[in-house]
Image: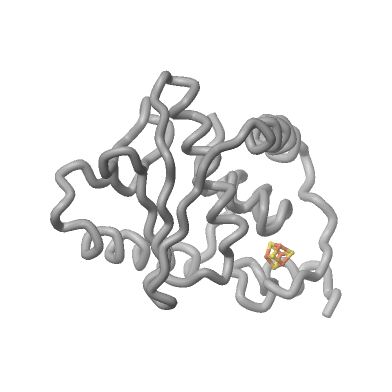
Length: 165
Ligand code: SF4
């Protein structure tokens, strides 16, 4: 099954999705994951249901009434965050659970409400198919420089290898 992180990377960079899915992990990526975990621990001390594992497949930060909640450091990747949340809502709906999503951005101190529409469902289904095709491909998607690259954990890996800088 596709993970939430894979869904997010699908939106950020398909090459990153491939590298991550092949288990090519970079040290600073690992640190970022730990940072995120600490953030979650601090953010939801009052919610008993924080970190809910759904069918051993993906983890939700917290359940809060009609909402599932995610917390992010900043809204820099808000489109990818939104897509990840839509994917969670989609998977929950498939299991007969209808929820809405709330994403809180700590840096900007704002919260976004996300609702799954039929159009979103179709987009998620298309993304799932494409993610499977990408991760089962023998080679990574071609390198294409993105504005995000310099902040990416795979930057050196990508650009040292292909020398496109
Ligand atoms: S450095 Fe750029 S191209 Fe390479 S994985 Fe990261 S975002 Fe993608």
